[in-house]
Length: 252
Ligand code: MN
Image 1 (spheres, rainbow, N blue to C red):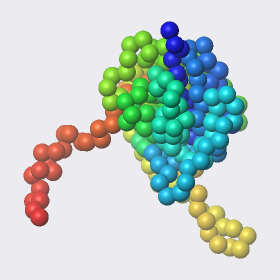
Image 2: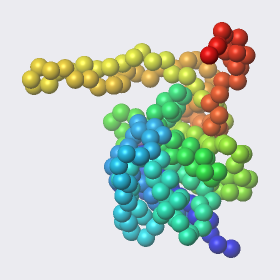
Image 3: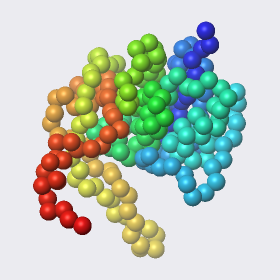
Image 4: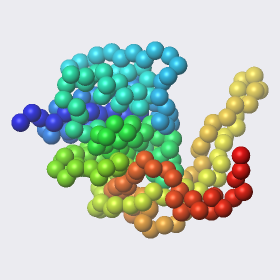
């Protein structure tokens, strides 16, 4: 039997340690193809490059860098770089340095790469590692879990229109929880600073992360030291409020 092709990408860029840890871990499961951005693309969300030419370069056997976003990597990876090869059996994005929880996933290049694969009807998951201030990031547990999950998905199949958002806590995980997407409370943190010429500039974030108290959420799982696995789907429709909106005075 032909070994399965596994396409991996990330948003931290080709040189990131999390990507290397993922590649090493998945090697025994299939033929790993690395198609990653040539530089950090964190926070780029589901951006697709449409207004300038996209280029990629081969960096080694089955290693490619793309001058673009994580979504570009999946798009070019599947349609161009792996053209003529077996279609990937699974796409894995990560291991991201830093978690991707709650509403923040809409900003995430890591999660969006998995979304892109799902749009192509390929099984996919995103995996992110919680970091701590001043401590080196250890990707070992996340890499090990990524391999388990790939094996599970290949054996069982991914439910249609579904991707998984996986987050791994710092330290030794106490177990695994299937969670729902939590909700972050945004204090609206913007840091204002002044450059040497006295002009103000701004830096988004910096606020401490706080979220709605919800024991079944992805946030709670991490806080309790568990790996969080959140099944996501592409349908963003808020079905519960459709009748309410229908009741508005909508005329044209
Ligand atoms: Mn990142």
